[in-house]
Length: 94
Image 1 (cartoon, rainbow, N blue to C red):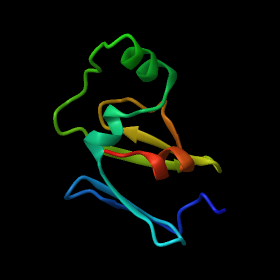
Image 2 (cartoon, rainbow, N blue to C red):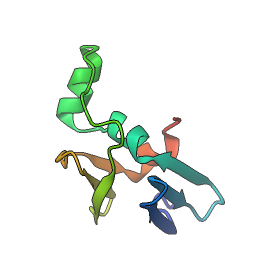
Image 3 (cartoon, rainbow, N blue to C red):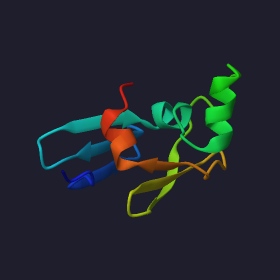
């Protein structure tokens, strides 16, 4: 099973990230949804402690870097620690 998407599009104007896979599945995330679900250790620990993660209302993706098993997403609030595995993104329901 191929986990890497066949297409990745960042729509800066609408603040959306669109992922498409060969099996026909598509995911369309807002930048804010991705920031709220960041899988980095700090954000995961905050969610487990039920602490609200602070970020600007219109947070946007500033850069994306391929990491092989997923993508590192950098946000314009300076947060850049989250590497989003392909399997995580494919299963993320937001």
